[in-house]
Amino acid sequence: MNTSPHTGSGPGAITPDGCAVEFYSRLPPMGEPEIVHAAVPPGASVLELGCGTGRILRPLAALGHPVFGVDESAAMLARADDLPTACARIESADLGRAFDAVLLASTMVNAEPAQRRAFLAACRRHLAPGGVVVVQQTNPDWFATVTPDALEHDGIRRVVREVRRPGPQVEVVVDYHVGDLTWTHEFSRYPVDAEELAADLASAGLAFGRHLSPDLTWFTAIAAARYGSAV
Image (cartoon, rainbow, N blue to C red; front, side, top):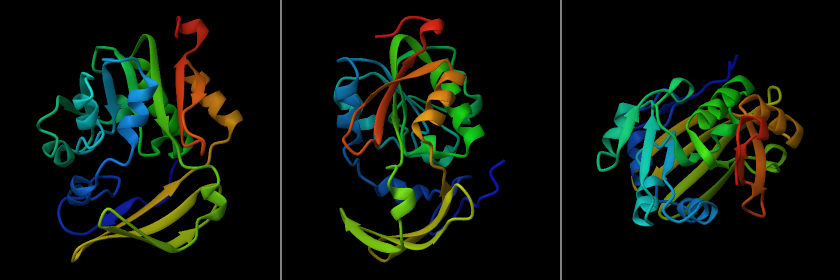
């Protein structure tokens, strides 16, 4: 069981995992759509699990992909009302249809192990034959190197205010500043090495595909051979 805090505060609605809806509605895409677009066939249908306000799906739709999003936060989905979506927890979502590509972004694969396996099972459940899962993970070096710091980009100032290492996970408290608005998010991330990842993928009927970025933060997974063919 994950006993680490996942809380948030600041103006507007806060999701169950501590994300600020107003902040994410202001957060621009940061290269994610281009990575996904390059990893899947032209015109491939894309399901994003945990789509939030649609900041990744919207550019993918503009690139010619039929898209669909799932998120547990109705407040997040209200900011994605121009996209087809369903409000559901990722772990239990079952849309009754399959997609050419399933996207698990926002480093959700670094959830605690049981939740990670549930997320991967949901990816497999919605994957069409020959399809591909595209996953974003935390840079493996981050767990040993993250310290309190500050970074600014696109008018957003991110301040890592506190870092704790109570066990295998790393817990952080981050403040996000946009103009005169501030949101705080406290969350944890769990490292996953290649051996554990392979086992967790296998438990979901998936197999590692290939890395998509030099820093190892993006990779693909495909259906394991015993579950059907994959490209």
